[in-house]
Length: 435
Image 1 (tube, rainbow, N blue to C red):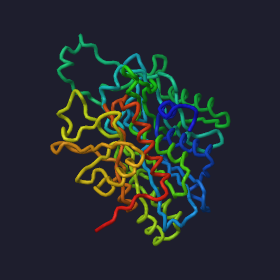
Image 2 (image 1 turned 90 degrees about the vertical axis):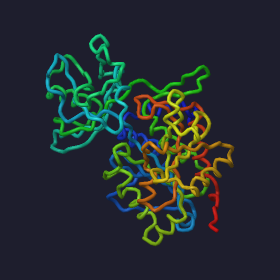
Image 3 (image 1 turned 45 degrees about the vertical axis):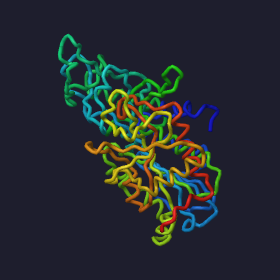
Image 4 (image 1 turned 120 degrees about the horizontal axis):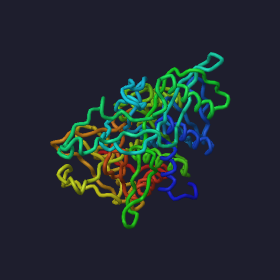
């Protein structure tokens, strides 16, 4: 770990990671510095004992370390999280010029809490695919890194009933304002090309072929509360989990075979070439193990922890939670439970996580949705189903999930890090016998 405290290092990571594409790039950069070998899916692999490897695919990353033992005898300690967060994604063409201002048309990415995006300084980041002067095409990351967008509210004088509840129209009401001296799509593309060529001296991009660009909150994460007992920030769901699992793997000292599975597109259902329902994680495991039989034996001895933020009980809306299952900030990781397997936890896997936490003095909590409300989900049950591995869904307690700025406890990153670190480092996992 760096000389920064864990939360401060988390703040730095989130601040440099505005999109899932930047998340994958930053994670791979950190892994390379730590000595991981970056593999390509279109090449043959040579996996050695006591090796460190990583692969990336369209905003997703799989990383793994190998010990001295046989995969079929030891299995893998697997930690998973997702790299994407709810956002506003630019449509392919800007808004038709209906006003003196240049605006973008956007669509909702994931379950966005729309009212929180008004009246904030926003920036723009993502991936742009361009045609270069030599006729080749390539994709590049871009990040404006400063406030360039704004979605102003309508003044109360023009909508006297706004505080009585107003439906937000995603087509008309959330088009961000970008500029007053840009008037056409061609000018917008030229601006993109200028920024890309300035940031990549050897690029020589000449035209824009397409982009995946997202609005994001410019304000960094920060502490609040009388004693700085809380953290608020953008994209805590689920960059916090990515960072914690990554840091725990980097700090691993034991001989176990460990794996990180960070997938894109969780917020929109995980059905993509790089989502949790893709073959990404299973194909990596197949190539590591070498045969279907060896993979089946290894998975049978493996355990999976899905890290994703959990709902904390809201002090202003106590009726929205199950009062028999209170979840409190700064009181430890949350085990997420659902009888319909919207989370992958069960009594055995939950007990495994409780035993691991008890060994290091970390308290756990249980979250379960009210029986009269629909339950969300994670990559947990999807990854468990794709791989056939037993797992548990856990996360830090969180207020305002899917807001542009979410809240967790200042102690919560450290507490869940301790659990992840112990999971990777314990000589053998606790055994739960079947009688």
